[in-house]
Image (cartoon, rainbow, N blue to C red; front, side, top):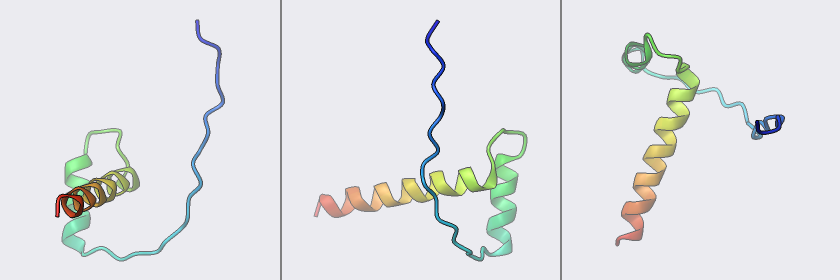
Length: 60
């Protein structure tokens, strides 16, 4: 059995942003019934968008 390792939580920064109501409703609908939080979904979506933009820019 592997030894227990204390998880490391990456540093975070609080940012206050406003989402259009339709975006909030769509995200909540998509994550309903999952263990995904609104924040986790938004972080994953932003990371994906940044990766796509950087990939596209590198192909130019």
